[in-house]
Length: 256
Image (cartoon, rainbow, N blue to C red; front, top):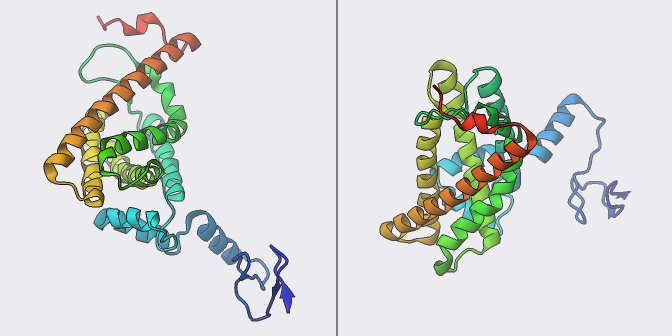
């Protein structure tokens, strides 16, 4: 007999896991290999579930979401970890775009207004992603409210998977694209937004089993709500930028 080092429960000497707390029984001294295996499993779960989740979010994303919602928690990476890794990669992406590729992320292809001073907003990209997630979930919950299948918390789960996966795609596309070609970021961003909403609502259509016209109308309502939220956030950012001195009224004057 022996005791679990985590919860102090009595264990048989042949146990590999504690039946009380589920902790793995460690019998060997630490090596770099053991540390990497433990870190990759606990933080990233790269040994199996991450790659399976990433692959299935392409081929059957509705199954990934429905599995987690229905209580199947070991088959795929949990949405919080999946989202967190994706947002971390997004932070790396925007750092590279700004400081290595020197892409102007705030320049508009349709306006002469100078907004380069607002570039500092991307320093808080990760925080904004976490703050916006509950709003995205609220919007998808509202447009499917009449279907009464997923509650608000379950929409949080769905959006964490969807937005996280789209962030992975954005990272994989943008790193080579902006490194090799001179592409206006705002043009790419608008195109990617359309693909993003399309992907989200294709998945939600499969979950809710709505017809194509119903899904299209819901998608258009979502885009309207999204525009309202982005406009409100843009106004708030401009006000904060003026207050903190990151911008001045002169920045809004058209270039001569």
